[in-house]
Length: 456
Image 1 (cartoon, helix red, strand yellow):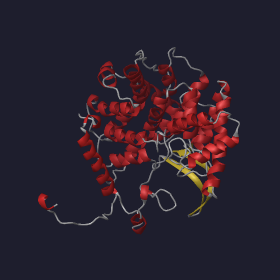
Image 2 (cartoon, one colour; image 1 turned 135 degrees about the vertical axis):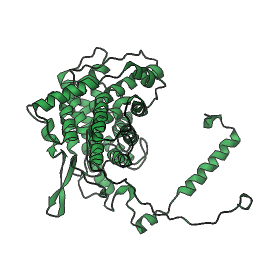
Image 3 (cartoon, one colour; image 1 turned 180 degrees about the vertical axis):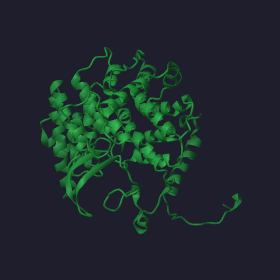
Image 4 (cartoon, helix red, strand yellow; image 1 turned 90 degrees about the vertical axis):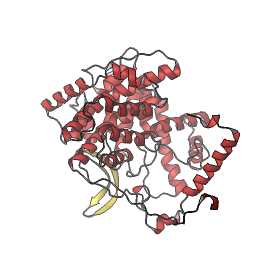
């Protein structure tokens, strides 16, 4: 394939002209969106999501319900199949495998009893390993630099290793889903080592998972040279996986899964489509943006206690004068939550515990300070008279970095978690046998007559 760099100067000029034509052709009068009451981004004028489906899998609560009316904003709550996530992660008799328990809850609709729990753990443990042929022919062959693309490639090509890939019956889709849930951590970590070897020239080491370890324990075990980790590290990663496992049917990647599943396509195609969505910096890639933003902040603010310098930097972010000039403070704000994101509240407490154990309180306190000052600066800058909170992405990158997880794996870790939610939603879509999702777009162009080429 010829790259743009290899085109002649004349063809480059022609291409630049085509770019301008394409941009002009694709430009729509912004006033028409209001004229036809188009729900841009499937949101109403207040920014709330337009109802496009029903689900029992999870519930995102951000306002007080007063009869038929929606009341004032409240501290956010997140429920998996009716169970408050806070109760799952704060259970004093916590299981060793919280992510696995949450996955069972999402997929099967109830908390497992002891027998169900133990058999589920054994099933996932038996499905974790990847064949040497798959590792050689898929993971180690032409690994992409972006690990989300590498993971997506693995998912798509699992189709070729499935004896019955197109069967969309519930038993077969459940089998495929459990295999994906079990294998995603291995595919992510192995893809990282392939990238590290082929793109960075580092030693190639692949450690097989342990059947007696949880998902969180296996990730740390496979990533570290000596395979060792502390109980706290495994517990924090386990909680992070739970918090990212599901977040209502309305998030972009889960909605994508519903849309694609409604067409009757196979499981691997549906999950690959969700992966494409999650890769975007407006969705799963946001935690990496937070880390990059903090790296840029540290270049400009040498004294982490200097709140005026931090304020000045945050104001520059909002005025598109710093970092990527997007006008965003990454990790701040949420489409649904206003008072607080329960995932962020939970993860912040574990981030603090981890920072104390790792003597990293200076950096943790910088994050805490930026969170507090961001709320003040945004309120002043945008004349906001309603609450404004941090979201789960704000602390997740810090947690991953303290756990020694490479930045290249930040978004894949999100996918390793969210495959549980995607699987539950895909099964729900198929069980209810809904119609194919087909949104309407209104044509606002003009009809013109066809002209012969010499008359154009």
